[in-house]
Image 1 (cartoon, protein in one colour):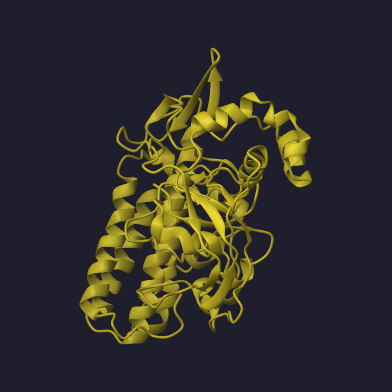
Image 2: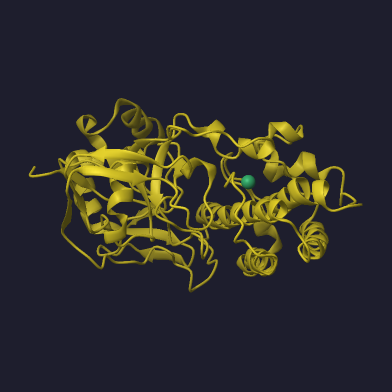
Length: 396
Ligand SMILES: [Fe+2]
């Protein structure tokens, strides 16, 4: 989040944005039945009900408690139940127990949202820059959870043997490349990081210069068809393509395809949020781990772009349907510093053992993308809407 106050953020703008972002969370939930709100099939998946309550708690904890005079907490237990990872604001329920919370019920969580929204709407009638900037963080936080809501819901429904349809018009993986070939970028010193346009998270701050050698980057993302060629070349049986850690992941978890792929009568199908569909070879690949992305690049005798190469090339690329794995480890930029207080726990403490992804995905919320955005996940995760873009050194 920004540490400098943004003087251009107007009271009316933030009040309008608050209503539209919060409404979008409710819109995403409309197709759900009550039972869909509860499951947590694995520890890293959060139930829809938890996302709805946690994003609400963020506004209650970080805005209303400090700045709404006379604010009365909605429920004293909710901070314990719906704090995610902020050590500065007290104890919390174990992450693995989020799916055990059949109480409070869904109706109560919607009451919580309404209660907090009513108070926030009053507060936002007349605010100073400090509050507006905090609210902007809260809204961007909720937008991140809206994407997580869709990725987590896909995991929940995609592991139901009935393969339920969330929405017929919400496939989110049926995209094709619009550009082909490689783009050549000359060597040079480039500006990296926040460009002072609008909101950014703290991990994009401390803009700095980075030298890159001449390189080439693909204008297209890898398609299902290209990935099937890789699979048909026994890639999941060949240790030489994989990092040692990746090879162990393949073996220990019996991985043989991207997530949500199922072979039925010798044909590949994939679960989508609009149900089980045939894998279209011309569609852009989705749901691969960093290990798979790197093994594919190895098989192609190329590599993944660094996050700096990606950012430099981004203005000339089509991006936004898949989070793109980069070859860069998630680390602080030189000059990075954690903001003071609990919000300092937002990004900085996760800068270890994760890889950077750039771009955005078809599940990313509206108005939540930019070329400097640094997403990050552990290398074995497949459940995000991830894809592969290749790069190579010049004239290879
Ligand atoms: Fe969160």
